[in-house]
Image (cartoon, rainbow over all chains, first blue to last red; front, side):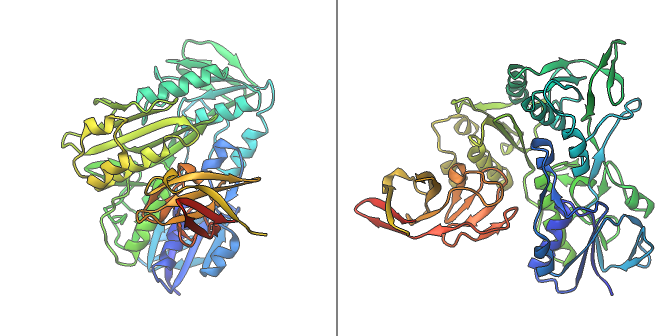
Length: 393
Length: 103
């Protein structure tokens, strides 16, 4: 019997499964996950080291979603529209969604470092984070910094090594990265910026200048690679992720891809996002497209990070080479935004204690999604009520 | 036993906005929608216990400031995940420029 088959039981696959049902699909929905655990939220792993299920097992039963957990997929046969499981079983599909996510990257010479992707990874890392443990972290990105905060909170001695001259150089404006850097320094983290690592293992980091440093544990947070093996083997178009169109459809009309594993068009730019929100939004959008509904995808990219009591939110995609405006919100908060060449809002970011900037960022996100021209001076003026500006837009 | 409690003045909450209201050991939010209706719900999002006082109110919905779960203020129902559980709502009456909640 055919139906909808989803490979990958992370945020994207789970949301897609529920969205199919919510939109009235009455056929079989099968959600296949390589991990044995009930699908869980990944963001808390690097923040609290805890595993929280996306929803209870009864929720899947209520919606007649068949879970096949702990079952890696061996291959996809597009000619017969079927998926073969490692155990030998074959599942036919009408439409297939690849929500295979990404995996932690390690550079050559970095064997044996701890990495974070799964609940098991988090448990391995957490078991190392105790008082006075010497923890070396390679990479000053989100995973590295969230784990640095977690390790410091546990009383560990933490050193972060970042090859670039500043933290979070890929996605976050320098004004925001500086706030985080200052906070980590104030908390007692050693920040080694502009410091290349030539090799590392479970307990040792060798710097580019030859210096050898020993630790109780070494964690690498140096990026992720999309899980595209199944797609490539099946002959689908893959270029830094599984290439999809505006409906998250691959080069095969019966096969869709969404979440961290896909490469899609965001306002004329090919991007691959590694974010919880994009996984959820794209999974839901792909589900609609699998049912033949086709609205343009308009959700703004958005992600957050929690470090100590600081909450960071970023929406849109910054061009870090272009000018960035500041909205002087005060109160220990920093809010910045960027206007593109046609006068529409391109991106915004805010950081402050807990959720103090989230309302602003949510309004900026809505302005981005709306895509209409904005008054940059008004957005920069903290006296101007952002919600009123949103209503006027 | 539930009792009617004077929570705030009507003007303490801006239109389409929210404030926090603590009573005893419990925490709530008082929400005013775009048509000046008032609502009271539990203060913490059902997803990760994040306080909704920093949430964005749009018409009669409130969005959690952390992970964007959206709840219908009139019923407490989840409109958008990740929250799975509805918010508890409490009766509200407005009298003499004050907002009373039955909690």
